[in-house]
Image (cartoon, helix red, strand yellow):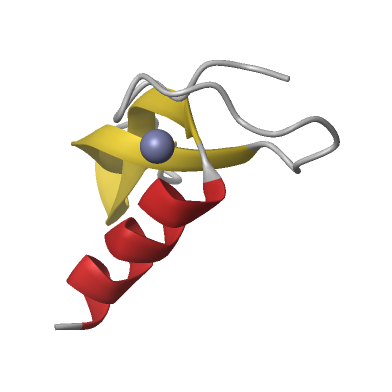
Length: 67
Ligand SMILES: [Zn+2]
C-alpha cells in the first residue's frame, strides 16, 4: 500500500505501483570526433522527476497523453 502523489489517496493492498513522469528535460548527446572535438550526436530527453500514482491517476495521465 502506498500513497498516491496525485490524488493523495492510499491505494488498495496489492495494487501495482504505477509511476508517471512529471518532469523531463532536453538532453543533448555529444561525441568526440576524429579531431578530438566534441560534436552534437543527437538530442533526447531525460527524466527529472517521477511520482508514484494509483491506477486511476495513471490511467488519467495516459489518456491525457493520447489526446
Ligand atoms: Zn491517485
